[in-house]
Image (tube, rainbow, N blue to C red; front, side, top):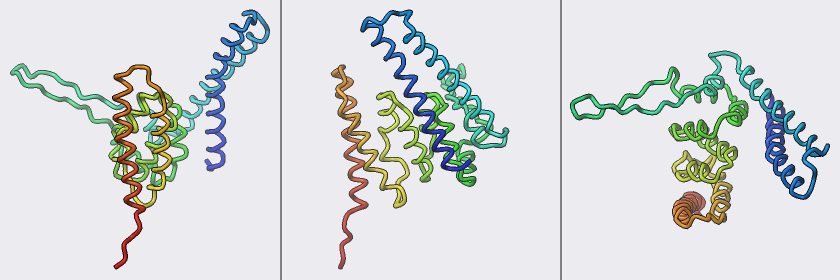
Length: 234
């Protein structure tokens, strides 16, 4: 699949999602403005919303079927389940931790995607995943390669809930950064600024978020500036 086609599909999916977000708001505003509930306009909005919802579901199904088979790393990633450790007592006052190993190690699948250079398709698959899956995925990354950082950045562009973004970004300075990707830090800092500009109505939560985000911004700035300091000559 060419980058152009992947980009077109990504744009179309983003536009579809934007319309699905807009139409209910548009309908509500028209209704409160005095538009009759049985008017042709509101009925047409319902019809378009239903058609777009069906189209979105078909696209997600197609994405799954396009993943060739069980040997395809993207298909395996799409079906990947992140198991939580199970805690239980051994009857002697000790707590035992039981963890189930997935059939395929996450990092092994990511290395296959890297070898095949299929990140565009992989990132397109991310868009069909739930926010819980995306956050679990990010949490399990080893952050030892540039593509780990690329994954985190793409996930930050997909998530829309502010609390989810803060959860993802709070340790962004610990992502894998080197000379090839450190130029991405300023854009990430702008995302942090946008989160800081939101006026959280809950005072305690606002203080917590502000503390997390200002600390993160400071660490990202230092990380970026240290790399771009002028080299001293002897």
